[in-house]
Length: 96
Length: 336
Ligand SMILES: [Fe+2]
Ligand SMILES: [Fe+2]
Image (cartoon, each protein chain N blue to C red):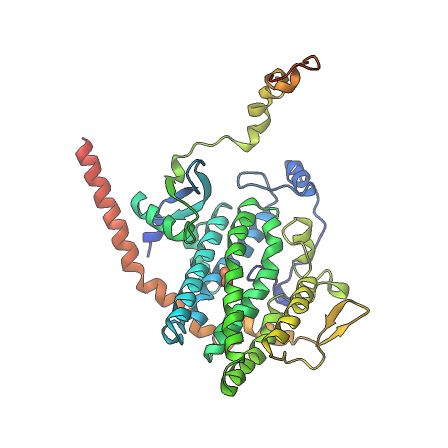
């Protein structure tokens, strides 16, 4: 009975068609990566939603912390010169 | 339940205004801006626990909901109908899994939630405690029960909790096939032999009122403060009252019944020009609360089947775990 409790959680990513990146679609439990892939096929691509699947053990993901959101992302806030709209270009100049 | 969250009057909490606790300013700002709360965000404890309950009950409803229809897979009248019904029942299993995964992002374990279902500490939608007596019940469930579920579920695609909203988007995409296949099956019967027509009418007569009960007790007008509605609305989880959703369902279903050539078993059902809606008769909520309490026609059978499926599947789960451990050990040995 405790079997399922021990199954790790996998995050599932689907490439919906060639030329697009894999996108996170949800998660599932499976005893190993191979079965996670098969379960993901049955769970997330029953209507041809994908041409390629990734499964990643959720415990292998390192995520940024929502509590540190400000200090973590703020440094990019005042560097508006990284955007093309920062620059003044004389009228009439094209392809720039 | 089944995308709606309500309790019997006895265990309904009183809706009290939420004082803004320190640390929850972001939560209330995001909810106020109609943004999405994500799993690791700070959130009020009762937001978290009530979402766990609602999502888990929704998940339980999806998997218990496989039973009434699953009973007819082997008796479907044609290979076409059998393939359709199998695909639908498989979708319902999928809906359950999307939802369990969404609940788990709130810090609970799926095994725990299944335990709660198996021990009766969490409920599932009372609609699945009614029997499927004839093949016409399968068409009627798709048309009315999935139809009512869609009306409940579409607003949840915009609910404030991100993982729940995303799961509902997937679910809603799949539900429209469920409703249409049911309508088509029922239309075929209704336009078949007189006996088939009678069978279709009988099924609709039995499922109409339970379908209206799926939206829960009254929660607008004088009942506005009953149950979870007020709180749930403040949190951006619920968008419309039970009564508004039920009215929406009635308004869209009446013309469909006419197209089917079937009647709905309510002498008070008629168009109200001044309201711009159909009026309908009083719902017997005592029946709903009796069924929720466990006194519906199939409660015991549904739970016994669910527990048996879980117990009889134990060896499969154990074997898969053993195989995974064996291959992992072999891989480590090979790498050494
Ligand atoms: Fe469903
Ligand atoms: Fe469905």
